[in-house]
Length: 536
Ligand code: URP
Ligand code: ZN
Ligand code: ZN
Image 1 (tube, rainbow, N blue to C red):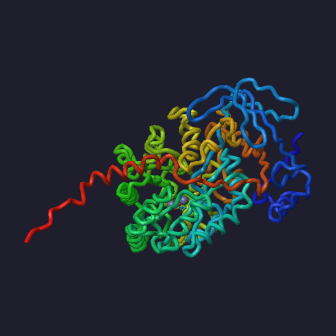
Image 2: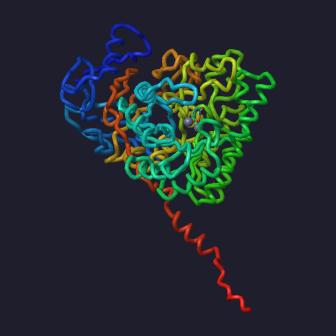
Image 3: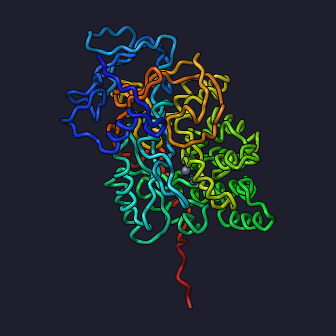
């Protein structure tokens, strides 16, 4: 019999019970201590989690195939996927008849507990992941930022903060300066710390932005390590100019942010990064693709055979720029992110690009701030912390927008929300699949159930939600992470410390054959030309 923690998240309601839970979260109990109804970690004695699960009668969906089958799980691993599995009384059975049983979502792009230029994001690793669980995401890859340029210090800082995780997580690392030490640390990150991707910001001048010389050096280093370079593609120099123009024109509100970051500057930086990646002959990952301009550069490059991955985000797929032009500052500011959410039309184009394989996977760029933090920029849009939520909303929104509308199949859905991310970051098939031997990260989605998004009911911490009022079909009714049922019947049963750090090995499939292309290039040079010695 499972004892359940009816978990009211402490940041939602301050009643006596939630204060107690909050204290437990802040001062985690030791493994020997037992608190009624609360499981601090793992499957140990006194812990309420069943080690054996049977998910029965659902349509099991993988990126390559779907079938009606049962899924049997033991000790956090999928043991068997086949019809009509019989089990004993010691197994918890979840009836999934008429529902889809799919790999838990993997969010490739989050910013939990991150000091981002003017403020720290409001969701920590626990609250953000609690939201993730309620929305059907079971693994995240968070961006770690260096501290004063030190990757090691940045990694240690994020590793410590992430200890309170309730789902599995990995890291990308940002590169914000260049010297021999950074190059050496990149090697350590890849060979010893399980990081296989590095992000380069072409925007945020004066803070995180790097120049083309650094980007080139970084790309070359990434290539040598089998790590994937990622770019935030906007032209930061042009944006700084345009921001000043807006201020000079007296445009100080959030709309000044959108107006100073037109799509052409996203297209330019995307094209530049793609061409430099072609020059280096390295794969490239473009984060938060928000515009047709950027998407078309990716399409062109892929058509020419270049390995470029494009990641749109939930907000870019379902919202348009009307939010940032709202007369209510709080609404406008909650819509402010970089690159900006674009005019209507870009959203549909990004959906179509995903459905046809021009873009490969969906992230969230979950970088949530509350309305008080956003109000830092009440007099100057440049001081509004950049970022929107999405960690909890991505899975239902993508289902409703893409599958319910008929644009893609359930298998495509699994591919763009989970499998492709696992492949790109080299953790497939441990993650991203419902296969014997894979981690038991599983969701049960009811295609006939409806959802409605609101800050009043979400499980993350912000007092606003950029998707406020959005409704649709496709509700995640059960979320299982590492074999634990963390979300069922509208109840969260999460505990800090149950999530594991997932090391990501270098040289994903994107690097296959790169050496052959390099060799072909070298032999095509017809140089150096052998010349006869000049005679006197
Ligand atoms: O506005 C955004 N995107 N905030 C998060 C940081 C980033 O650029 O990804
Ligand atoms: Zn970015
Ligand atoms: Zn981001």
